[in-house]
Length: 303
Ligand SMILES: [Zn+2]
Image (tube, rainbow, N blue to C red; front, side, top):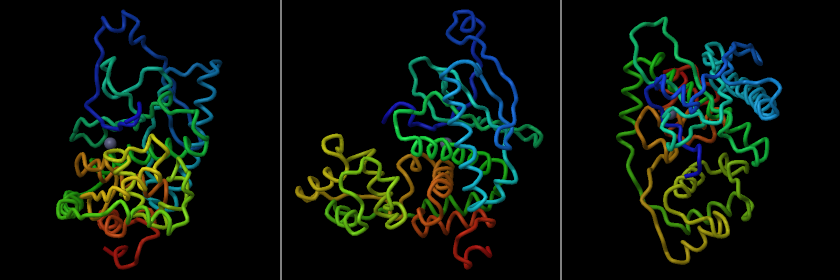
């Protein structure tokens, strides 16, 4: 996948003094600020640099969007914001291997029994591609904030019972067969433009979340959509009579990494697209874990 697309998180890395000396990891400046009501540690921010100014505007827009969306779907999180670490450096990743994959964001996965220890939610602002439309990039940054806050909720907030329920629901989820022709028809039935390169910005996620999530999953694993776009690739696959074995209740491809990442991906979908973008049963599993969730069916809300 494209650079920066991984949000995998690893234990934090301590660079050696030698690496600092080599200039590879020059020690960045840090200062704490309040932005849009959030406490944000700015790392490597130079207020007069054009790149920093541009990324700061993106950060502010994403924080506003994140606040708005979270207040609607998961108010608890709006009242328990974590410290955000906004990194402006060129090289930003959980894995500091110079040749490694760059991240959009990460969260420290070291466990601690000390409730006073709080890890920040980290954003790697330079790894978002500003050649995409601003609305798209802002949504991605807000989504990354949701995903990384998801790790905090999973590790520091959820009860073992809630985590167990989520793991069991995921584990019981069966695979089923879907044909490329069915997915092509679902695309058409929702009136999604055939030439769109950004289906996540159309009504497809809300009108047919199951088809949307399945198509996006296949787009990152199976479909060859670089020639003519996603819809054209579905048409070609339908002509060949292709079909796929996919999760009955799709979340995202990355969600298959493990139950914790699946939880974070579901929370990201919830915040970026709203409850309707989660395929029904996944919304129900999430509501079982998070009783304060809004916009979901009363039957689950009470649990
Ligand atoms: Zn993650």
